[in-house]
Length: 150
Image (cartoon, rainbow, N blue to C red):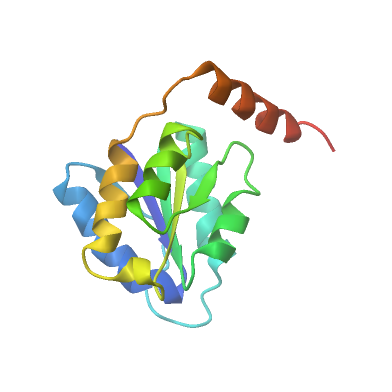
């Protein structure tokens, strides 16, 4: 499975670390930038193209910023994206199990960035499959309908 990685300057170091970790787990990381810690790097410039690519190919994306929150907002503007800002293994697991999240949002300046914590979150998020429960499919269909209304 390909995983698109994108970050701004504040999430750059965590992106680099988790990109290597994903590769060690057997995933194919695709780096969509940023490629430095230049504060002029604005997260929408990297997050949106990465999320569009993930949605278009049926793959997933992991995006990073200082808190991961602005990145989550930007990612959820992409039609077909279901981005979740996760801060522990429980929220990571539930974002996949119940919500079929295809974008994981993490903060490079938060507790999540602690060595070991981010890796656990990424591992469980990548390993967890959508439950396919009828109630969750019904709810996701309602969310998808919102993308078709103005």
